[in-house]
Length: 472
Image (cartoon, rainbow, N blue to C red):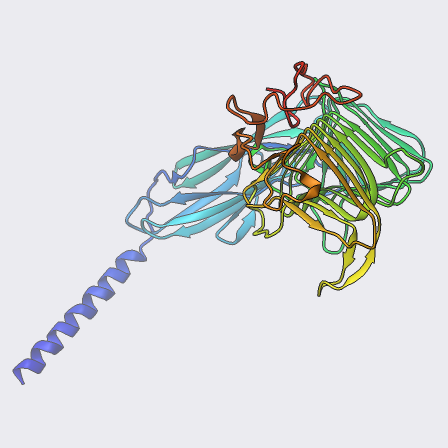
């Protein structure tokens, strides 16, 4: 009986403590106190100002926490300094609004605040800083966090058709494509030096990017390159792939790129069908295509010529020749270290075939490829993939290339190429594929005819040039 009594007494004591503690915890603090913010400033970097009559674009979401430092419950009021006209909006633990009243926060507990902004056009050339504040009041005491974003006015094109010859020339305001832009047949679309093009994110079963049925002329210069990228103009997304679809050339379309940089696409450039006569469908000089989710450049029974170009950091292929075509590369660098996919094949692929998902041959077309003074390298043991059938032409001429390749067959003769030598790029982790001082690519190139006298950056090449796009 004695033992039972002690147990009952203990249980009763625990219950009383729990009830007493519960009563204390639920007491609402009636004084004033400062709340503790996890940040004193929330900065959104640069976002595009809102398209007239649209909710696009809106910023990424920033998250901060606000802590109650009291040992009691409090009631807090939250509001934005700009009131109902503030370009910012907040959501605190599921409660949204420009002003939130009597939000209860437990003792030593925190709430999470989700903040976004949508900025109105400012009619300025350069990005303009838009400030506001998020204020939290308990009793008579107010604490706050500063909010800031740079708004950048832009030219918007939403699912637009370019029916007539058109030139984009504005280097101050970027051009933002929502959905896609279609260039019709018999139409020339010119993009002048220094122009910046941003394209919206992919949508289910829908291409986002630039569609060419006519002619695209990209006219960058050494000091004023033309850039194409995803529509988030912040450094944090610089290497993020799959932000937009890419540039797609329909059969019969043509293009010429000089000093262009194409990043963040699914496929940087896709070219379908052979051109007319001996001219290539698409020609590239001093260009970079980088950080693509599937491929930097694909030719489908097509004709492509590239000089002094970097094709790097793509999920599967830096270059894919699919179902034949005619391809010429001189002083190009093909490098894949992105890790976007767990690829098994080499990222530089030459095929004269089309196969189904089981590998059965469906079709074949003639392939001709000429590769001079280039670098093909990456993290795999073998970075060249070949799929050919002998009943269709498969001609490859490759001389003075540095190639990571285990199958040194007749296409990549080790006596006239540099097989499995070390290019020693400066910094692959930052996508810098210029050559280090100990690179095996230095001074190994042939002088081609016509001679390639500059590199990807417009730098003069030496009398005995270096391999790849960059002259050391």
